[in-house]
Image (cartoon, rainbow, N blue to C red; front, side):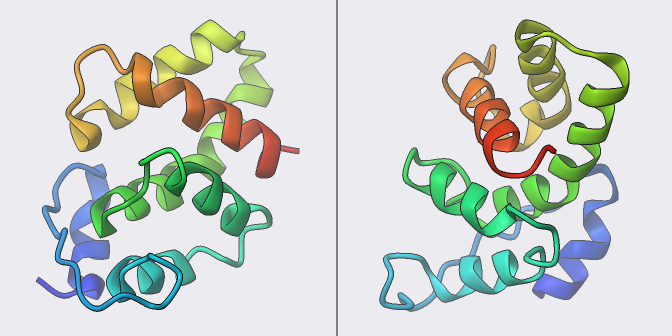
Length: 123
């Protein structure tokens, strides 16, 4: 499945298994992952968010990058509107992205996503 078709298939964020990797871009990031990231760089702070999370092992596949790129801007708006606490925000990320990351309770990955979103994207 191409990256463009994957994007369309991600209407529920979990519907795409596109995780192909190709040659390295010189920065340690595969070309496919970098191209996926590039599609979300119009949102201020997303480049920094991707770099921060990549260093923690999050957002290392095309599927994960699409999930983050689609989800994070809406998450920031929801968190601000609803005044979610840190714990509620982690629970929200776990519920919304859990199927993409397929990691039980989400503790090892959801909290860093919330922190990176707050630091780099949410205003």
